[in-house]
Length: 525
Ligand code: ATP
Image (cartoon, rainbow, N blue to C red; front, side, top):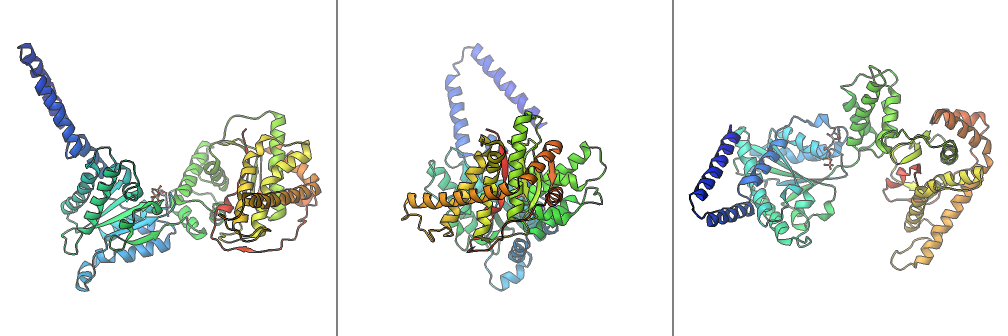
């Protein structure tokens, strides 16, 4: 209705202008004045298109029914948030004790770990109105627009709570680093700084006696970019780390997202939780969804373990491609992947989850490794084995065909980066190094030493196991993929032995997950 009335008004206005021009009136000054007023209007951001955009933004995030029970894992984050929320729930006691209101909670952590869900659950937990927006929505080239939007955001939160007859509101700002980045660091200084200043003013204005208590929850993957004024106590009083889920958390998240899907008898959630180390909640949700799509495509009425395993590969690498390489190329890819898989079984028996020569996303073949358990500390030997496994693809190609190919480029990049990490962690032959004062030549020498020794190790190991290597290649060419168990059975039949005794050496105490994500895959040139 409103829209129609507006259109009729615009039409009538245009008609009047044409009629007046026809009568000989000079309308140019009027038109220029209109244009001027329109731009002034935009600049202040008080009304017009800008406010409409802002209102839809509020509508999109309004109210929610997510509960803490809908969030898998993240027990520490949930506990910290619910503790912090007590002041909203037990407002009167808080006032009696003279507790100043908590103004902000900052959730930091990698993408897809459930920060938005936690903020929504906080609103449910405290029976508050929930309003969500993103930092990028506040950035405009016109000075003052962002600050006005911040004012509007808090005003709308209070009004929304009043209308809904609630005494509290939760304002959630995703990507808050865009709005709350360090002042003076942006090219469009003034606008950014004004917007952040307004946010600080709003936070400072929150009082214990406000009829509607507002709590700001910010989420960021880059908390290091935030302005120190925002991080000081009295602004973001709680900083809650929302990390990638551990094994138990992953199992719980899988459980939650599979609860509305029919499951076959062979589903092993513990195994799935184990092989998905490093996955976020969003990855796990996608795995369950992709598995259901696969089951539907294949005409199953319930999900099977194979669907979930395949969905994991799809989430890591992408959709299967139709393109099939020529037979010679296929053979080289199979040799390469078999090299990675055998070296992995030699260095870490039982670690291969699947080896395949299927084109997916940007890769033509892939070995997925099963981590034995969630690990955060690695011995030097473990890290060196990563290098040997990465180089084993090229080594196998050399052993069988007499030469290497461009398919190893990505493996080499990962191997070099791992070697450099070993050196900088002080685990190489040159001991503890200082990045600034150690010469690049010395670093390079240590890196090359590591690469050479692991290349030699892979060469020796695969040379000793040429028969199992050939057999694995034959099976891969026939079946395209082999599960870890099938590979190990084949290796056992071929008299495969673990030739190396693993002697744990120095430990790396740095909490690190990156080394677990070594992914030996055949890259297209
Ligand atoms: P980003 O930083 O990219 O904004 P985020 O941390 O806010 O991400 P959410 O938007 O909360 O992540 O989560 C995205 C989706 O991932 C959710 O809709 C949900 O399906 C799933 N998810 C993430 N974490 C969990 C979890 N802990 N339990 C259940 N589902 C989860």
